[in-house]
Length: 87
Image (cartoon, rainbow, N blue to C red; front, side, top):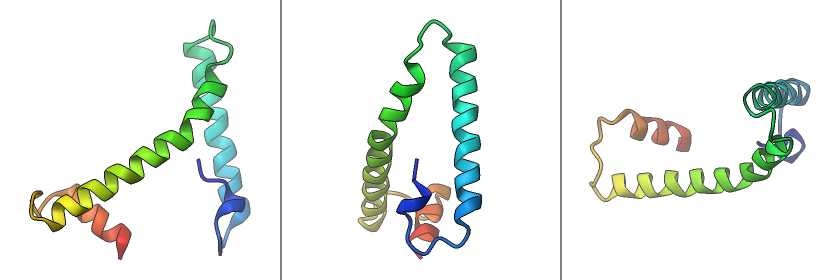
């Protein structure tokens, strides 16, 4: 997850912080309900978030350059989303 304090020019810091707290609470609730015997599961998941973020950025770059090379159709919703993000 992105820490609200790490984002420059964030207009509504308190809203972002509140939503992040809600997401953390929902994840904790999910883990406690579905993995009650694994007491460290929540912490393990939180530790994996930076890895997941890094992999998602690599996948985004890969798809974007595949599209630029003509290897991915232009009328793909995922490609449209990537272009919108980069605009």
